[in-house]
Image 1 (cartoon, rainbow, N blue to C red):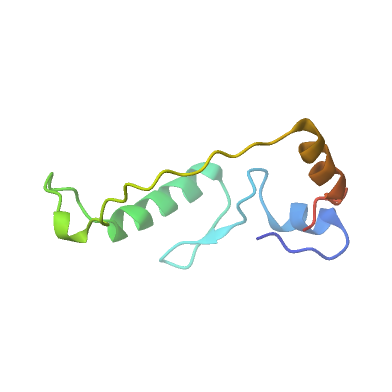
Image 2: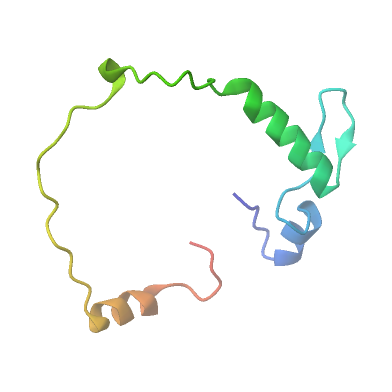
Length: 92
């Protein structure tokens, strides 16, 4: 979540052009390049995810629900009503 100090330039200073600020490697080195940050994040996520063995444990799957979701209707006037309620500065 971006920090908000009343000036969007603060977030631009803290984050890189891709929205991800500098990261610290396991060796303590600060990483600034998109490539270095990509490798660091990929290595981390690869280390914590489970390797797929092709077998699904059906006991861990949620039970099937045969309920039907009701239809949802969005009229143009409803959409306009809620768009007008949005704040112009994008901050919730």
